[in-house]
Length: 130
Image 1 (spheres, helix red, strand yellow):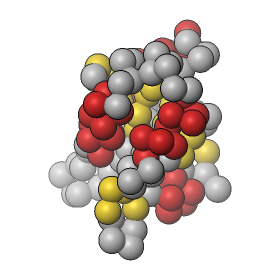
Image 2 (tube, helix red, strand yellow):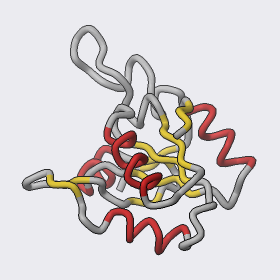
Image 3 (spheres, one colour):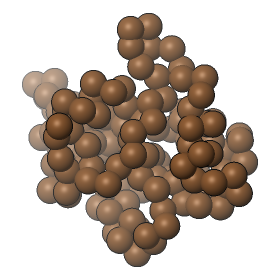
Image 4 (cartoon, one colour):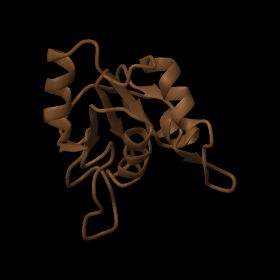
């Protein structure tokens, strides 16, 4: 798995229109916190028990096709859940998996707030909220 910053991911998506940007956060995060424009939501894990989605790989296969060659860029809140999701996709045969390292909201600052240090939103990249 390759690790790239939000800016690098945005540039990659612009240069590779066949690539998929998959937001692996919970449905509530995706809808109410916001998400990158064009991101497709497939939860890696979700509430109320936060168990891993047993259908995650299958849902991604439906979106990407079964060949495993389509580039997949994964984003979560801060770049941690997307690593686990990417490892599952690689184990299932996907060969072009990218983790967006800072995630959508980025790392915590000294006051334990997100969106002030790094991340997709902090970088000023296109995003939307429902």
